[in-house]
Image (cartoon, rainbow, N blue to C red; front, top):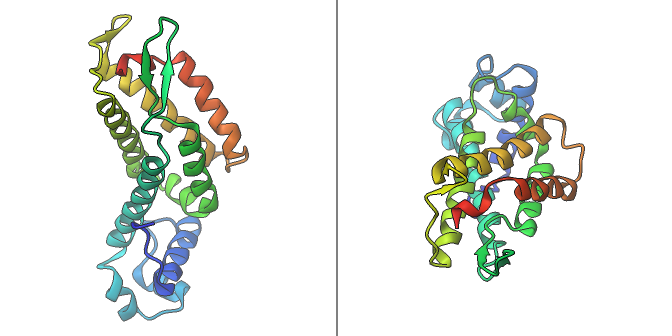
Length: 203
């Protein structure tokens, strides 16, 4: 993944940050705490990050970059769904892409769990929603489709919000519940939700 740094030192810092998020919380932790937990000195920490805020931001940036890459690489440019009236529409949320993204989340569950419980900071959730919105728009453009103005009286931007909020909230709840279900089970829930959400307003 291009967004994710892989140096041993940065991996240790991330592990220390994640552990401290769970034990002390972001506000209470210090750079000294992070360095001590990572087994490095403060100078080494500052070679990589400005402060704990920069560390958190870079970790979130890397995570979003990875998820975006997974979703984009595994979306099918030629994937279409045919509606009952015979019209072909593109399907932005490919099950394979969502499954791979969910496996990524589960493999790094400790970090996602720590971030999801970090109080009022919902940046990761909000940015996940934004990635999903961008994916929908990009898929629509690939098929030269124009969004409808409304769906049963719902304006297109509200319909977009309904869809991406539903998908994001399902993933977020799954993380908060400990990723107990398999990624495939969550994919099924998302697919079921898509049949009731105003998806075709976007195409």
